[in-house]
Length: 544
Image (cartoon, rainbow, N blue to C red; front, side):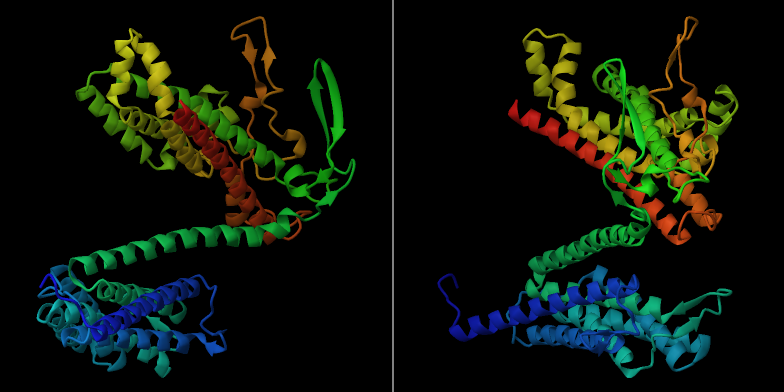
């Protein structure tokens, strides 16, 4: 009834039930995080957490979580908790729980009871059917919680019983020389059960029905998004942790401790020494070096990316302008769309083979920095075209119409209205492309790489290499036609070929991780420049 009000007892019970459901969601999130931490060996199964052995702790949390979810669903069914469930949990949940219980029944029959193939099949079919019935026959509150809670509680009991030890190994008889270890399976099962019961608890917290489905879906999305971000941060942190000792080895500060550099100012040459000396980033390879470094590879990577961007961005933006503003929408533009999408998804080794077969014979028949630049530029070009087109298509037609109404020509409209409005999108596409090409190994291996340890005297001096001649083409640059190194190729050679295991490079493992850290910093630096540029153009558009 519209004027009815709930009693104080019902309000307090409902609030308490909400708190229990929210607590179950929180426990699921904790289990999800612990499972990921154990998967990446941040938490060891043989260690302890808060003084409790890790494996029994995971088992206890899973058992409590499973029981809580089941109790909440049964309580809802008997009216102890005020909810609004549907008549059944739905076909999607039924299929999912059927598959889950099919696998669980088969594993119990074959691994625990030792019934063989026939027993595995029979147990899997029986438990799968039971899971289907437990999901479809009762109301949504029981159908969503009972199958999830029971399987999670069973997993918790298995962990607590000691049946699985941290060192357990299961041989896969149907796959030669393959096995599963507890160090892998326990975290995976924990993460899976956390998602399963977290979804059920979130549905319970939302009161089931339409709102419960939304809350459950939101939880799955949030946990997976958090996992993606967490893994990325973990990878970066791990690289930093492993690479910092090698990167800062031999670091010194003081007047004149760094290498000398010469800069031309107003026709005069000025020589100065850096007040900081970081051997790994400032040295190449030399017999007289106390510590060798990767300066030529850093410079080579920088010029590779700069050259590729200078080649691809003007061509890509120009092509996007033509396709968007001038070309009629028809078969031609459709073919170009298909071609650019296909080129962007083409494996990088194919671009490398293209550069090896087509570019190298035309640049002195040898590997060169210019061949590497153009190869990576061709890789970047499709993404620039795609993102630039999308950015220009997103510019409202009202902008173009208003400019035309003022008597402005089409090119002036494109230059003064369309391009400024689309620039943030163009920059975003370029940032994404740079992130891909800066770490590519196969193309530069085939077109540019000239060695792993390059002397510092062979660092590519692209700007100083320009020479003006009286004969065509009037400008030449021998530096662009020389093979050099790059960080991705150097890292590949250090890891796969074992290069760097001797000599004055310090700890070889530290050298490899420091190279990976430098590559990461170079890529992030390009990202930072792109983000600042995009932010600048967005601010400029907002002010205008």
